[in-house]
Length: 221
Ligand SMILES: [Mg+2]
Image (cartoon, rainbow, N blue to C red):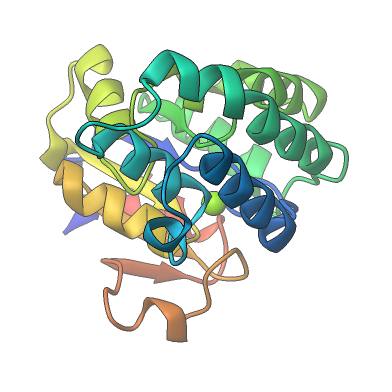
């Protein structure tokens, strides 16, 4: 169904999808939970939330103890520090450069929609040599809500003037599947990233691929 030329834009997640998954998740989420608690958000409310779920929930909390500006001031440095730590270990996943190049050469829009902040994301795509293949790069700093919200994907489609039905999102996690569903975009998950196939069973993606190299075949380009 995707190989019929209906797809005009392919949007990618960064960490775990185009590069190895390196974020120190457990340590980072524990530190963030303490950060939200220090702003007087209830730790119980955040107990089961991911790093991005905490951010989205804080913004959506009625009569929140901290407004958006205060949240950025207190927590951006924490998110950025873990991003930059991950950046120091990122390696391109197999087929990343070749796939991005092939999609661009086939005339498709290629975009990046990441929960990583602008500083680490920009440095990462420059250092790894994949910056030239992107028409559009949206970091955490370019959206209000992080994935699993569809905010970033909707923003990307708006900018590229592409309908949700004309796009494919490529990611590696449950968070990516949820963001794609929220934005009404088809989603492919690449094995070997953040979420195992078992973890995706409750909300499976449209396509589960062994490697990035399978995307061109899926799209018939
Ligand atoms: Mg990811």
